[in-house]
Length: 156
Image (cartoon, rainbow, N blue to C red):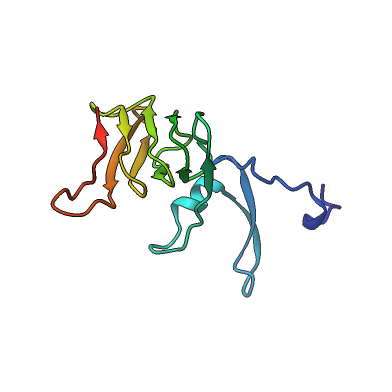
């Protein structure tokens, strides 16, 4: 492998795992030394406030929400399922686009397992706990006006 250029290697694309390794040249302007860095260590040591990209999907049919995207825009009056997350601390935001869907959370932390959106633009934000293997709803977003400050979603 010593005779290959990094640019000639096969692109990993979307198959990145937390145990995968980066090649790092430490101290390139002083005494350079080759080192390895795991994806998990890289992401865990980003500076506070570092921009992190979010990926999204648009869901138009009854289906399982992708567990590889951060944001799901549900644009049909359908039931969708939020299955297990992929990594501890994973954030999932579900937004009622041009519809009022129902979301069933397969592994919910607490009593709320189903959320019925009642207005376009409502949302829920969930975080995956890898230790308990459960989603926790951490926020409800609303477009409703008046005194109903958490929106009109029905949660059960």
